[in-house]
Length: 325
Image 1 (cartoon, rainbow, N blue to C red):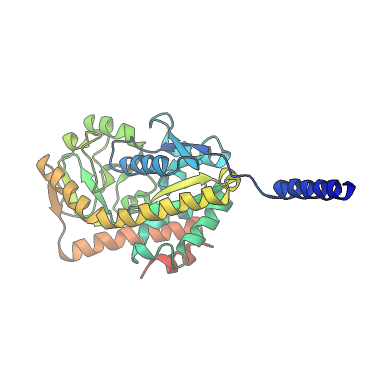
Image 2 (cartoon, rainbow, N blue to C red):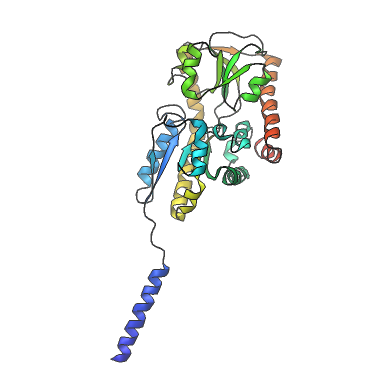
């Protein structure tokens, strides 16, 4: 009897040790998130819809609490991620260039963006985000959407824009300077007022959606050809990312990769739809021809790479090899 009791006690103890050694299933975690644009806007809506999908598929694993846009300037969101005040952000690297100057240069990608995760680009950029932004680069998208110069009411017949006042962000800064324009930096929320009052003569923006913020009402021209590629990032505070279980990290990564593939698949149709929307709103196209068009695009890329190499001479050459043909 004593032997049996001893054997049972030993088995119970062994079971307790095994139980203690087995990590419990991670409880559902909720990440707070912000976006640089409203949820119903061109580049706010894809993130909003992605969040809804994550919340549907991630019950018991991960949930995302997306805060209303407008509570924070896009130019301070990078610092909020770095400090941990915010867990996740939908934010183009141009808005945290103060932390990672080279991040904005992803706009200069000329290789197939489908190679982003297979040719070393993601690993390189994620490492820099870890080191400089205290962030995990979860996703980058919208590479198939170009930027354009939009004009309030002044038609141009050359690429000398001396005397023009253009609203800018770091995305266009070097290019617009190379064209001779005077630059005024404002958040997206202030663009309409600046155009309405004539504070600026034009602005840079992607092809997508100048209607939601009402800019179509104060925009007469779009200049072709386009230049650069949009590069929107989903970033997560690195400490928060490390606190997630492998199951939670793998789930978010899977959802991010699926989003990128869908984004690439739908970009062309959306480009056509947004171009038509501008035409229907009365926005006229100024198409630069021949050598002028070639010089215009060349200035865009030359100026941006020159700025990148000045801002980060160590990492710019590596990134250029990774993302350009």
